[in-house]
Amino acid sequence: MTSTILPVAPAVESMNALFQGLVERAPQQRQLSAKQRIKRLNALNAEVWRRRDDLKKAMWEDFQKPPEEVDLTEIFVLKSEIKAVKRSLRNWMRPRKVPSGLALVGSSSWIRPEGKGVALIIAPWNYPMQLVFRPLVAAIAAGCTALLKPSELTGHTAKVVAEIVAAVFDPREVVVVQGGVETTTHLLTLPFNHMFFTGSPQVGRVVMAAAAKLPCSVTLELGGKSPVILDASANLKSAAKRIAWSKLSNAGQICVAPDYVLVHESVRDAFVDQLQLAMDSLYPDAESKARDYQRIVHTRHAQRIEGLIIDAKERGATVIRGGEVDTVGCHVEPTILVDVPAGSRILHEEIFGPVLPVITWGHLQEAIDFIGERETPLALYLYSKKKSLIREVMSAVPSGGVSINNSIIHVTSTNLPFGGLGSSGVGSGNGEFGFREFTHFRGVYEQRWAGVGGLLMPPYTRSKSRLINAVLKWL
Image (cartoon, rainbow, N blue to C red; front, side, top):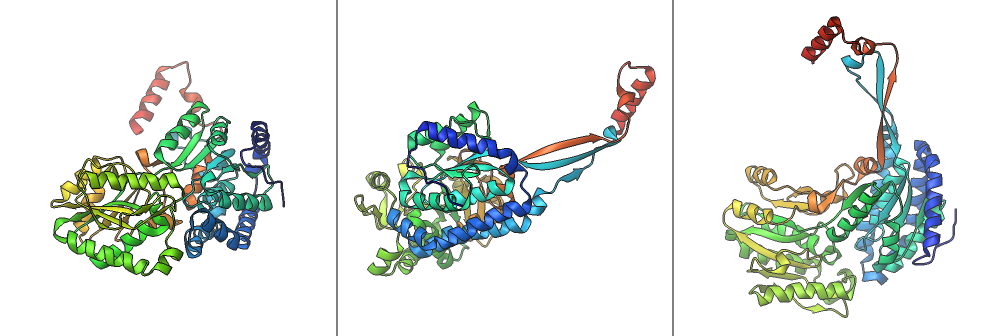
């Protein structure tokens, strides 16, 4: 199926017409069988695979994303999501009978999963294909129509995404609209049934405010400062390699990248040494750095990261490694900071770059309090062999998700919910949890025979009062 690719920032009238087409199609979309929904997912999977090289080229042009990372963090994740949804979709769609209870004797009750209607999916630039299509998989599985808004900062990838959608879907089912702030602002005024936004907490608040005016339900996958707690029992070499990889992958432009490490004071120096060795092993020479190390998406983002480093240094932080920023070339060296004063901006603002502050603690409560002074993180990372420490931290520190003795990997699981809490997000994605975000669980009640309802209606005689009293005592 092929439809016309819309121009970037289409006219308001064009967007309104597209939206109306999605609205008109929504009732039929809601009635699609599991087989019909899976057919659409198979078509999406096949077209993404066919355009694999085009996606790699586009992401390299956008911000020099290594082709291997496109395979691992974009295409692999999407294919895994589609496979998991296909495996379980029939079961998720099945109406589920529930007990009616004694007071409703004579009736039957069940829950019917139904698509919410028309969904708006606003995706960020850091994973410009995966974070468009992963929620789309959930929307299609749930039986929704969808309008996709990819980021304007990764325009080459957005163009390929639009071409993929146009090749797979009828525009009344799924359509892509490209553009900047003005385009998004108008889309947020349209009466969608569900909005799925991935991006910064600041913009997330704007999306939630727009949804409240309609009103419609929202899923907000936001960011924040995801901390690492590392104690003296941890395997420092293994921990350093995993933390270095998760911090430098995508040049740190990941919503769940470790934002700072809280390390026990007795092993700080040893850990920093291992961290430097790990960074060297990931990008061992100039050729590897040029080929495998990603760029920052835009000059203003590189300038922001440079400002965080300068502020920390001016306040007394020590740069152990890196620290150099080429704002024109959008290149930030892998950077490690120690002795960072508490008032430094880098300890309060999300970094979203390859800069890692290392903070020490002597007593565990110090680390817990440090995290507690900040907003709820999207992810919490614990590196320790002590089960008691892990239990204590998990009980004391809320977060969207947790990884123990690893970082970031939990996000790829199709069996775990991925989402935030408080300032780090609302709702969850991945697998069944994504399906649920786009689904209305409709409660259905059927009166099969007379039951006892009539015995509890006025006029209230003495015998009815005794019956009501007996029911209350039984409950």
